[in-house]
Length: 90
Length: 391
Image (cartoon, rainbow over all chains, first blue to last red; front, side, top):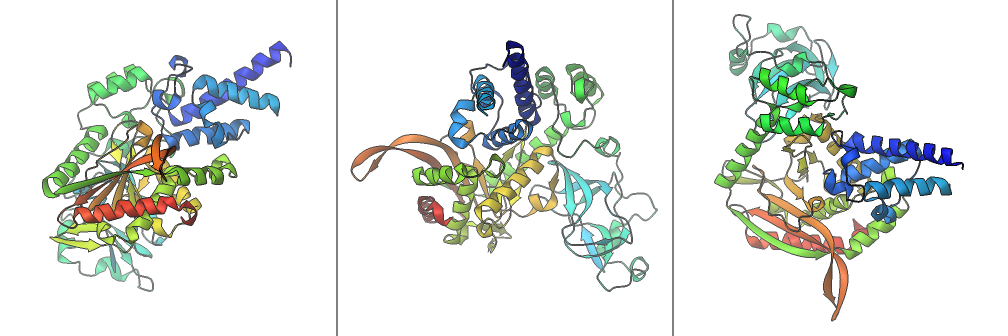
């Protein structure tokens, strides 16, 4: 993947993840969320909301995040990195 | 002739603001169909009908404030001629309810919700953080504002202009009032007792993880769903905790409808019920929970969601709370409080091991039961969660 393609892919992932989160917490200001802070605490997201965020990501990008990986996607940065890595592997 | 009446959507409801009919005279309806929308302090509710028949005459009109139990419409029972209704004599209560002069007897100004365009059913409000904060200060109901920002997002200016023009009590304030009424009544009338325990849920959590590992994200089961099932099973052995107290007597419920305390993003709570929890297989229960929570958060609850809980569960584990002692939701007689699932040291067979643990409490009505019932319930809950494969 060229550097340019990598940037584009990263932007697409960010857009999809943001959309999934904003569908649940529309008032969230994701530009000001601490990237390494827990999403659930920063955005008042409970376990039901969190599952719906993952369902949203599954629908838009096709990645099914298993429960065993929940710790890796608990922060915004972690979620973006995780999705990028999964897409690269697939 | 059948009468369709304003339902009671919770012990704290005295009346509702009639918003609109979803049916018209001559239309056949079946039990469970949504026939009208009523605005309550908990938001707009889709009201379902309990009888099957044909709508003969619509009595309630949009904008009317109507007491619980008053007739909203007349129906012809299956096989009954439609023409016989409307011409026939009315019952005394019904005649009094009908406007004599043609003007609504209890007319008030139409609700803004009735005039404003309906938002998409599952749309959540888009609100900037500053606007949300200001709306809280000004007690402005965000759901009544049309946003002028990107994608209809509500901005700070929208909130301030709405506040300037607001003369009616807002929905958020109405919901606060409804909660205050119900909880004051509870603490005034119900002598609460409380029992609490920590439950080792390692087996249950481990079992559910293995189950979920084989399920796609869309069919994954939350731990709270497993716990609801365990609660319903435990209640079967302590039925004196499941039902309602009215007129000085306890009425045991054969069905187990669990009210789930649900926080709303705009503030406040609603307590929609998941029906027949004891009879649902775990995936069905998760589906029912998902549906009712989605309706609650979208502000599109149905009358059956709010009408008939037999016990309530409050789950504060997601907020990091370890133990919650809840206030019973009248006329129910018990409430289960769940804390977070967290790894703790446990003594098992003489050794210290680390196992996931959940704080569980039971608030009971001392007029109906004693602490022994609460203790038996918590012991039963532990027993159920020890054998998750049987749930």
